[in-house]
Image (spheres, rainbow over the protein chains, first blue to last red):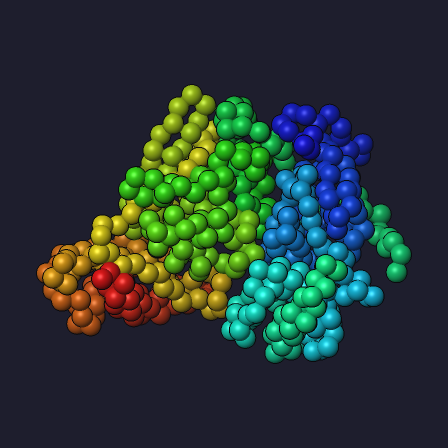
Length: 182
Length: 302
């Protein structure tokens, strides 16, 4: 269990005097730790403290979806979570979905279907779609649209993103015999 | 790419957005109530944080203390009880939405929850937190009001139950007092042969509703209306409940009745204008949505 229970913090920031908390997170299957103020957002914790800049920060009030990560497998807005709150839990960022050599079906589909242009919103779409497809392997087009309705894209007009989600479902089904690589 | 560096200024203090606050993450309800009693009135309870964090990030609020209740696993429950559904303070919207016993006891919960923001927000946000936030456009406030539910508020040494009618005092203002924690909410079931629905109009799916309502219609064995009520969001400072029973009781569940109810509702509400919609448009929606919702609810009442 994380040691961030009330009154247990004795460490303070040397310049600001602000109390600091030890946050321990399992990020993409690796335990990582940093000492941060309670007000550190999970999005900033990932980007600034762990230097995992794949998670993008857009609106910082939960509207755009760019910062979506998976918390114990479920998509959440990392800008609407304090890192200290989720200490002890597992986080998957876009870096953890796949690699250039072994792309996640969603990543492969976004590349095949031109599902991104500037790419700023893409990490949020990838994590959201990956979690959705894990639970709904054969969505209709309407369901695919609904699944990504909480994410904003200012470039694509969404058509190719919807296509990408549907294609990702296909790829995942094609890969099913050897599904162990996810 | 390698490791990116950031300007020193950014590394030091610009990477946090909310103002500083004292933070406590109690492990039990008892401990949480002790902390709340100790920190006084400049404190906020953090549950899902899906409404609180935006406010903190934008520094619209800067509470001196945050009491994080996310470790109070004892409050993470959704239970069908005698006469209704009890939801603990740490039940996420998604838990309530997916609960089969809750759906069986009160389908309106799921009907409303599917309109609460987006699935990603519902993964984290809590139903009791939505009630405590008392946003007049919050769907669950209307559900609590329509069902005549209640909220259990605990403080160190005592607990009280606040009826829905007394719980919502104004926009973003609930009856919770400093030192209190909303530990659960109770949503009573409707009588047999009651149908319900939740309808709303929003600029985009998942956005705050310009106007919305929860509706319940109860039919007699002979198919006539015995009760009809609706609870509206985004047309007042608190959820607005209108009872159509006097108007519709004994009549057949048909368009003319729903139309009359729509007219009555239009006259009773006093919506305000904002950047999303004029007062007139909201009033128009109240009429149209009332008609549709009562018809849909009656159709499910068989």
